[in-house]
Length: 232
Ligand code: APR
Image (cartoon, rainbow, N blue to C red; front, side, top):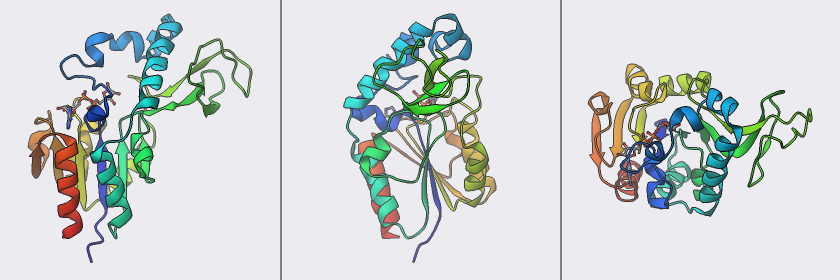
């Protein structure tokens, strides 16, 4: 029986066919907004309403999105593979969970989360958030999305490094490999002896670090890979 530990990193590309934009593709989010304006603490300090408008729009869009065959395939893998399956996602949408995945770490936070900039209290975000919304715990009007911005420390990093060291297989799906520390995960996993696989629409910046690659749309190549993995 194959009880390999499988660690999967996902990026915006796995949610593209669910209608959610990626960041760096043609027409992507970073061609419509400046990162420094909507995805940094300094940008939030400068114009909190602009940042909340950006995330309120993404939260509304994500709430209407449905998981696609790639998300469903990863949920099937977690349910049917005898070994541990962990998804570390850079995505802030909830499509892995909507597809049925349970073992998911959101290293960049989630659109569903709200955070108090004054006391670090966290709660479930309302559909529309505004900085003036008082924190339910301390009452300060310092509400922000519980999303990790550039210059901030991603979540769960200690656990993630441990999982990468223990992985027998590491798979990166739908990520450009442009943002660290996620872009370094393939090398970390390989150093721990993992077999590394890139499943992407096109070769990422880290493609040469992977032992195996498969290119195409996630809704095609991810179910294909899961079927092969479960048949091993
Ligand atoms: N199927 C598979 N891969 C796809 C698809 C698809 N249908 N569509 C796009 N892709 C691939 C692209 O080829 C690209 O390599 O998904 C990747 C998307 O890359 P980015 O837009 O850079 O998204 P991501 O890698 O998730 O960005 C990482 O950067 O801005 C930050 O916090 C943000 O979490 C994000 C991080």
